[in-house]
Length: 76
Image (cartoon, rainbow, N blue to C red; front, side, top):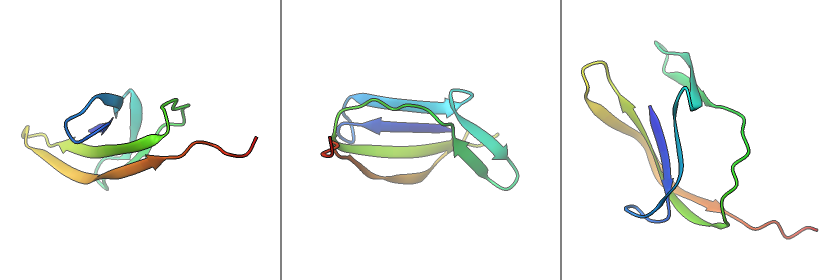
């Protein structure tokens, strides 16, 4: 399982997570996983993300894809 966030669909990688490094599978048969608690320090911007799963056969499937808007905190 691999999660990536980029500045554009083919742009610079700003966040990469995988099983054992930011992602924990809690129920493999049920397809349940969690993104581990962490501090993500990236600039406010619009990012493009994708979650990809590799099956035992080696076949890769993209399960989630979209955009992720990070906003600057305005309350000080």
